[in-house]
Image (cartoon, rainbow, N blue to C red; front, side, top):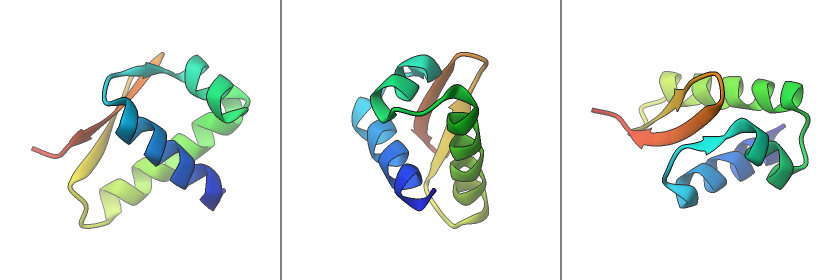
Length: 68
């Protein structure tokens, strides 16, 4: 899971724009269910930590953004 967290964070950081969950799953070779778990864990880590980044999620897309 930790490796997937790091890979997901890096992917979202370099992409910069909203990206579909389907595309992330293809790039990372993860099923949608597994991707949802990793996204939830990353969102939790970003919210709990003193980090300057946050996830913006909707039903289909994800984006890593700076906190206001």
